[in-house]
Image 1 (cartoon, rainbow, N blue to C red):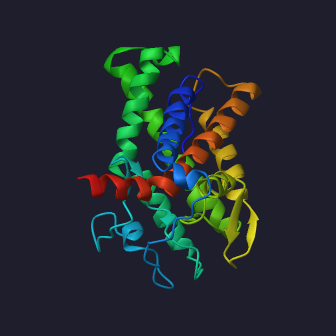
Image 2: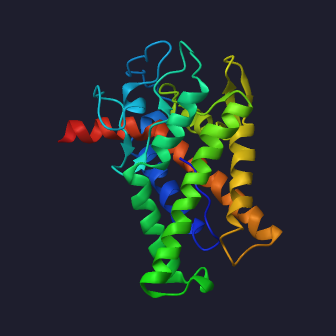
Image 3: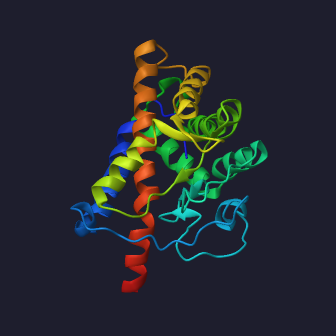
Length: 256
C-alpha cells in the first residue's frame, strides 16, 4: 500500500506502523536473535497470483495469507514466496493497484487520517465542519489512490518491474527485518532479476508532485522532500507488517 501524506500527517502513521513492527518482532525474540523460522506458506501456483491477492470479493481461503493486516491495511500485493518466480502481466499489476486503492480498509484509513488532519488543522484552507472534513477525506483518499496506481500499476508497467512484496518468511528476525526494509530500494524485474526499485521511488515522487495541486498549504520543495521521505518510511514499515504479520496471526490463532 502507498499513500502521500501532508506535513502534519506522517508522524502519527509512521509511529504507529513502526511500533506495530516492533511489537511483531518483540513477540518472537528467538527470531530476532538468530533462530530460524521455517517457511510454512503454501507456494503460489505458477503463472497466477494467490487467490487471496486476486479475488478481493472472496475465493479460496488461505490460512497464512490475509487480505487485510490487522483487519484494515490492504494486503493484496504480498506473495508468500519468491520461488518459483513467475512474472505477472500489466493487467495483473493494475489489478493489484485497484485492489489496494479501492479496498474498504483504504477508505477507513483515509477517513481516519482526514479526522486527524482536521483535528490538527493541517490545511487551514480546508476549513472545519462537515465541508472541511469532506475536503480532508477527499484529498486523503486521493493520496492513497494516486500512490497505489503510481507504485503498483503505472511505473511497474513502464519499467517492467514487479510491484509485489515477496515475503522472506524464514531465517533470523534481523535478516527478515533488513530484507523487508531493503525492498524499498530493491525489487524484481519481470525477468526475475533484482533491480533498483524505480517504481517505488519515482512513483511516490510523482504522487507527491501531483498532491501539490490539491494541497493549498505546504507546497515548497522542502515540504515535498519531507512528504517523500515520510512516505518511504511508511512503506518500509508496511513491508515489516507484511513480513511478520503471518507470524503474529498464527500466534494469536493458537492462543484463541
